[in-house]
Image (cartoon, rainbow, N blue to C red; front, side, top):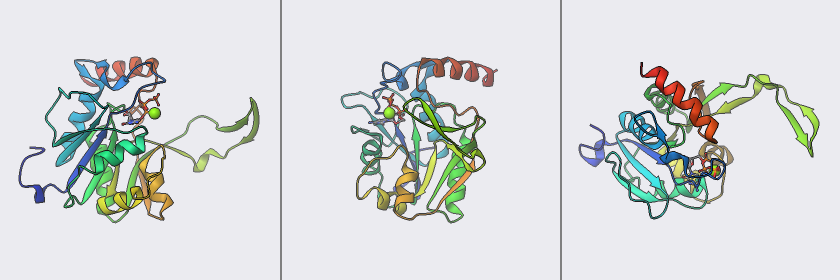
Length: 221
Ligand code: CTP
Ligand code: MG
């Protein structure tokens, strides 16, 4: 059972970051209903199934009323600051840390297992990546300035797994990035990719929640 057993046996810790303001959505989207639960409940349930113990990072002042987790801590002003707040609650004996966005409720347990497996195999970090189907262009003030070769571009998701020591080292200097793997890259760590999941959408605006609701209904039948 997640969260049970002596602490030294809990080697894979999950951090679910849920302290965002949801500015593009219009409100903190992680607390919106999705099927018979909330967005955040689904993310927490999958992370709990895949990890030995969980830290949940919530907006300051939030009283967590969902599934039991090892620790609930208030987040920071940026995603990276929220991850650091979560990491501070992960005990030193943790070997691996998996960071997951509460805003990705449809990631599968298999995806958590895949990123952890890739780090166990020797990387500092492992991230899920999917190919980009659209042509990608660089624009400046409404004008196209370049068309990028998309063959070597991927879109990256969470969950992202890390050797605990590598993630701590990457966060020591602070700094902000849209994902933690970027901080590991910045300090010279090896980051590998595993196949991402096409339906592991991140809820960003209300249309994404409509799509996720349809996908969740489909997968539960
Ligand atoms: N997050 C967080 N702390 C922050 C910012 C983001 O824990 N200060 C979390 C969000 O709750 C989300 C994940 O990081 O689960 C990805 O962030 P994003 O999708 O950008 O969510 P928000 O920051 O809430 O949305 P927006 O950028 O539109 O305000
Ligand atoms: Mg944000």
